[in-house]
Image: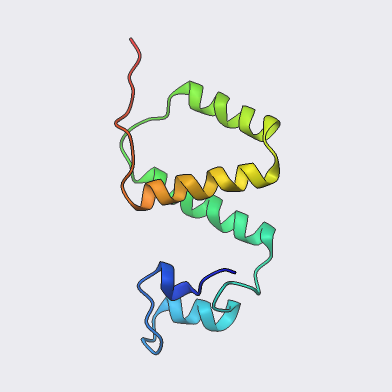
Length: 100
């Protein structure tokens, strides 16, 4: 079972915030948003966060991501997304690797 929006964000019931508006319109667990729409939101948010970073992306990462889409089940792909989101949120990021 998914946890409500306030578990993951700074939302406090009754605060009049944008997060409150989202919860009122789409449900405490975004149950009124389809899976495809949720994935679209993830893509947009990830793109926005990534554009705020200075470092580039190694070419091999694009290749491995393509392999993941080809080789992994949808469940494993979602699991990798969850793992990466947690690593980004809680600061478990490796320093960039620069190959000579």
